[in-house]
Image (cartoon, rainbow over all chains, first blue to last red; front, side, top):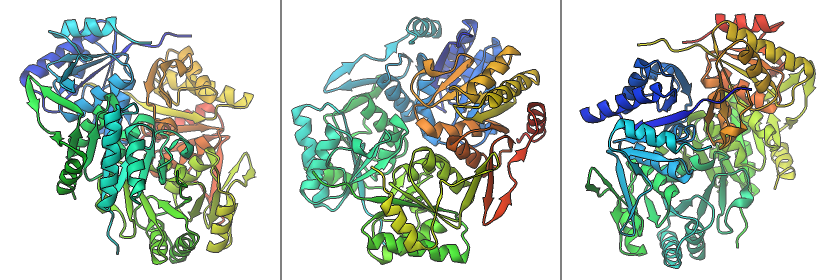
Length: 160
Length: 160
Length: 160
Length: 160
């Protein structure tokens, strides 16, 4: 019997700002330092920067890809998971994680935040969406000021 | 060669307020009157109320179900589509529609809004989520004041 | 409360023989005459021929499409269901049916037969795969001699 | 830039014979010795035995799970991928692999063989299904006499 590894997802857009690139890379580095496996959507942008950071610290990176080809994974993905199910792979990215760190992002990231919150998976936000309903702020996304705080909060909130 | 039917999705929560129940039923009725097929997630709450409304006006109702059983569909679903893919069926509900009407809803509905907007499918909102990013309001969800206006806007924005 | 409609799937390859084209068209016609909704993968070949047959007798046709576009549906699909989940849509085609009729077909059809049998959904075969394991014939695929017999057997075996 | 890891799938039933249990364990050991990552459906039976074998030789094991819980993974899965998409996860198991080794198995395994062959992914068979169509044997499943031969053939046929 072995222990299953801790897994945290990094989600965010394919076209991040320069600041988001830095945030993603530092989140990746921090996860690797803490011995956590990074799971992401496997493509470019925030996903690639986070994998690059993790890789630089010897971390393990998993990319859950929408298409049919492992070649589509960014160069820092060590373990490509090929789904062929398109955008539905977003759900697998968040469900495979015990906590999710969202950095910036557009509507794809929004869908992932929705799926994570629906499943009770903690979402830590860095410069990402904020939500309200019926004129009331929804505070389910836990804000972090910087990558280290994001990773610390994610680790402290890990589920099951 | 035949014409494909117009299809509009109604999305929303499983535990709607009494007001949302009324809104959903009226949206369903209005869609049926306009000859539009209603697609939804096939379960209870907003989904059931919308189907009930459509059914009362002789409309066609499709329920795209998360589980393995057609018995799980609400009693007003005429055509159950069984997926067995769980929450990932949310994506099919919005992608099968040419426009989406969101009524209230929780995080599942939020994920559907994200998937729809990412695919360029118009989303009309009645008492639903509102979104902002970096302190800026995102106005992609088109607001409607009542069911008739929601259906009119949806029809006028139908894609492809 | 309304009755859910009977739904039977027709599965088979995209490049059928001329004989398989005829079989598919006649199966489609027969299903429509019996008031059964036809569900299929929505593309060309056996799927299109079956829809064409059903359409000629006023039947309802549903195409569960692998891609993102309703335009990809064959011209005889009235209700396109857009999945964007690629080949995984094969599972939805068979699970949405109460019985499956397989006509010819290649490895995609084989995967659908596997999924149907695993779910306990009856499979009727016309010129399709035959299976054996450990040198023993597996007789789970019910053979039919012609389209009318296939539809009759399918109807008699409908589940739930 | 790093090299992506070699990944081979082991598929087979949840209720294997004692002989199949041995075969699976030895296939797992052999894959680990060759430095290959083992991917499987993550549950019991052939999947668990293969993971146990790989684990005993220090190999990496990925389990792509149908449900919502990482606790459902067998105790030898190090990296659980949670899908929540039910049986559709079968497709991900084979697509994430560069070759597939099938041991025994029932209709779920048959569906995986269909999906693999459709995607051009080599399938090596140990005591598994054999296929024919129109009275003609289909020889796409490459037979192996023992676990070592199965792994050698799989490695020699690895795609992309």
